[in-house]
Length: 68
Image (tube, helix red, strand yellow):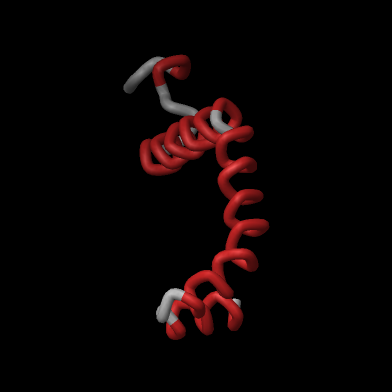
């Protein structure tokens, strides 16, 4: 028999999943401004790039951006 204070409270599988989620959220918290800035640049920049691609001959790329 093992003492009661040595029995793990959470199974190993759930514990490792919790640690992974904690690390992911920690990195997201540290890099939120970069993620937001890149997302904003992508969201605002793609509508400007569609006509440029079409003018340069990349009609499929311009049309794909228009569909998005």
